[in-house]
Image (cartoon, rainbow, N blue to C red):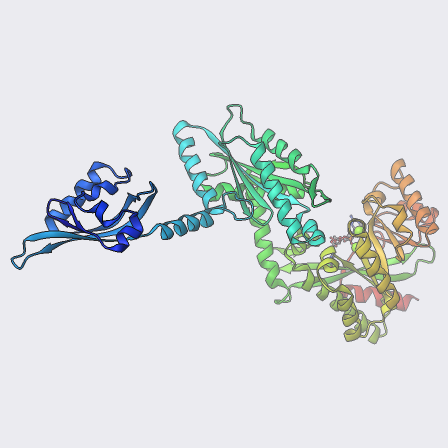
Length: 541
Ligand code: C2E
Ligand code: MG
Ligand code: MG
């Protein structure tokens, strides 16, 4: 487009017509302002002309209007055309339609800030919105609640019904959350099956505990996934500004810890953050870091606790119990690190190591003429769920040369219950190898008698919680009798764990319990001490 000094259009090319829709005849003689979109104020044009007058050049983005009324962005360069003496004669404007670039910019913006699956804001936008909310709250001395929500059981749906069903589930949860909350509350997807909610003006009729309760109820409603009914629940952690942190990062961390506490409390519930959690979380993190290296550094030990026949008093075998001798923490009991190892997957190498170490140790004892009997090794759920446990066991037996008939595996009742079918096949295959299986902590889950009779296990291990108050507690005595009778009727042996006194031992013997393990007989012992115990019994015999 060429204009004279007064700004009247002198000539345009065909591209001008293609972009604006105006023919040359329609354009000539007009001021370019006839293309104005109305998007820019007077000061915008003033600056433009100012720069042209001064330096003879302007370049920038400008919104104009086409003949059909559509507003579009163009990239425009205007330069003065000068005569040989340097005086401006006319102006030439060159521009291109950049609406397609703008569109992809908007798309990029959307992709960068929204989760494509659910359409909810993503983590980045959540942080931005949370920081705005915190600014407002600081000004008006208000509180803001930040929640982190994690779905319980999502993995099961994903694994059993497939990823498309999982996606559908996330979308319908997102829709439920959006519908449930007020318009001014933010709902975001943090990733995976994690969501976050920001609720402002806490206190003024906005109670985060109640909001969490409503969310829990809404999530727990069955979801129809193309004809399949799926059930998931929500574990929620709540952090408050300013109580639990002053910025978005801290608040989300605090809410995350509280969410973790909800999971620990049995899921499908909510917890507020409190200061102890920070301490607990730090410890957890330290243990997790230490644990990663503990195996390589040889800080793990296996201890052995003897198991006895209640009638003959003979030593039948020993249970392997892992210990962590940490340079910083001293001797760490398994309850402090096994759950963390399970969550992080470290239980796979750790569990395999315990198994191999126990078998190798037992072979060594036998080579020295000592008989440790049957070695019982604890197996954690993830070893069965996430690894090829069968292959692992057969390989360890092959490598160490320990006979399968002298190996017993302890699987907890709660795991067997949750995974009845998977467990049943595995137990079947293990028993074909000659390996024995015991149900650990029996009586604490809610065993279904219908499948118990199909499980090819050999032993029920009565949980120590029932043994503790024997023989005086009437309920525990009744439960103990019932477990012994049930086990025997199904063809299982019954062992009691946590036997600490003679009175307990006598009661169990009277009631027909087969075996016993506990401090009364022997504590868990490091390998060298257990070896002395074996040697003493051998000479006594
Ligand atoms: P568990 O398999 O039920 O083991 C029995 C626990 O009771 C052991 O605790 C043992 O030291 C303790 N105990 C034995 N006799 C008595 C007694 O007379 N009185 C009392 N109060 N306690 C007694 P520990 O060694 O701290 O192990 C705790 C749990 O950690 C075990 O419970 C088991 O579930 C887990 N665990 C230990 N080693 C391993 C392992 O190598 N792999 C896996 N997956 N879990 C393990
Ligand atoms: Mg055990
Ligand atoms: Mg137990």
